[in-house]
Length: 248
Image (cartoon, rainbow, N blue to C red):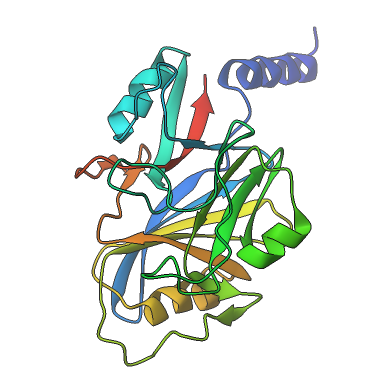
């Protein structure tokens, strides 16, 4: 066998053993005096999904419970964060779909709290792509989501900040959210590491992360897990959780 053929064979064996590289990447960054942690995924390559109930019907609630369940499948949790607002019993406040099964209908009307600060939106995960939709656009489009979670308010809508965000707001919390690129492949998750306003958080997604649509997931209880950064935030039990699964 020639040297060239041996080199090609060695590279192929390495690829088969290691598998294709995942696009998931996490990092810290600062913007206008605030600190954030960002995780970017490629929906055409990474397995992005939602977790609420385990196979026995119990609530996951914690990142560790999801990690333990995936380990039994020979998989690993690469990234996770809380994935939408929930009631005291951990059930979703808004629309929720898991493995193609709708567990909560779409809530299109205004209401109290951040969720009802219209426009709100839906994070929809399909095969090979993921998108943030404004809720009424989601209803009109009726995409077939394998996973979906509704939250609010929208942070960025078609490249513009939510119209109710105030530059001089004094409401500051730890906040987390998700934004998507126009092709449905680029998915960007962010959590603030210090208390920020909606306006500051929206500017991060619009001006720094450069996504046309972004959705607020929650504040105050916001937490993140990142295997790459060796980070696993603790706190009260969560409702819906967004995760990126790494298959061995």
